[in-house]
Image 1 (spheres, helix red, strand yellow):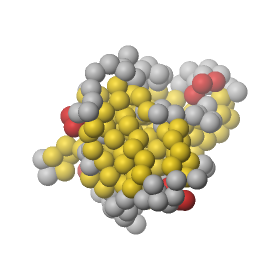
Image 2 (spheres, each protein chain N blue to C red; image 1 turned 135 degrees about the vertical axis):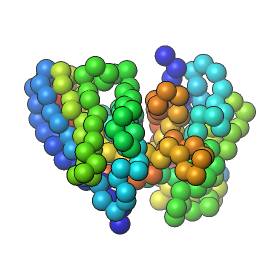
Image 3 (cartoon, rainbow over the protein chains, first blue to last red; image 1 turned 180 degrees about the vertical axis):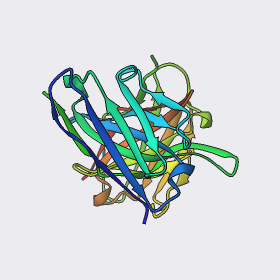
Length: 123
Length: 110
């Protein structure tokens, strides 16, 4: 079974740092791009960041650029999100998602598998 | 900065049809934006419904379909059921690795 399990959320003060992890299983992790998506309390989904399968290409929403760093360890089948200079508005549930970019030469750019999320509270 | 737009809410009768749309504050949505659609109920992770405009994800009932209507992407629910009452989000690929969600549409079935 394909599974994504996030961890590392918690309560942090404004200006602080936190590192989220996402453990993947059931698929060849290194073959797929991955994404982080967040949802503030009572708000909609917000795409945060993505990383290519090899880890060489990274992408960020303007709201987190320069403060958050996405990375992955393919030997551990784990995705990370290092969050620095946290703000109250970063309070959200953070979801890890498997990103499908290209299959057999055709492009798709969507998320097909989601974790259950981890909660980050900045206060 | 381009904003992805969705209707805030929609109401549909059981058995009825509802069309949700996903547009851009500037410009038209085409297949080149690879629109995808996600369903979310309170307290749950999103569920993938449609990708690449009109391809249903595995296990998604065929009452859900996607298309381009005019200058927007659309999610059509035909024969709405009570458990379709959820929030629905579209996602567009904006290029350079960046994707953006719409604000979401809350669908009520009553």
